[in-house]
Image (cartoon, rainbow, N blue to C red; front, side):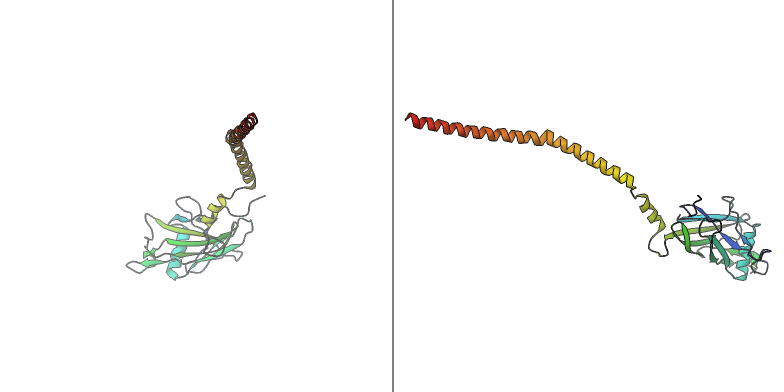
Length: 242
């Protein structure tokens, strides 16, 4: 049976609705949105987040990529991208939509082709029992990256995962705690081993130390009693002789 829940480090593909020349979302012949994902230069695979893994994920996109054109149009028309990610690995899964705003800065000229795209994003995500339950992706305007460097735009997504819908339990911490959970069979074996060790140590102590000490004390007490008896016997004989 196929495992439908995400496991740690599973890829979660990110798709966004393609924008047309006028900034509107394009549709397929069936009326559904035209979902696209960039092909990352680093992996030659679509852009993906990683379930339960904190830290940066980098994706560089070539200028001729359709996704790059969509990012520029989102920046030009000042609209957020409508993106989505699968909630689990079911064949007919539900998707969680993310509204991702593309920020940037103008350079001399003020034209769209002269804009710089800010490629740094934070991704705050919530998972529960292998299912994606909530999340948000937003830009971080700490440093504007060039629109293209040798024909490539670089994006970096800094991921932070939480267990459940709250912000109190980091998924990374929970996963480490679960790794230290002792299985029942292991616990039973540990108890049996502990009992055997206690038995061996106890037997060595009883046979090697406790019993000899008790016997010695018994012989000493017996010796003292014999001396007292002999002394009393001598006293009685003395009295009779007198």
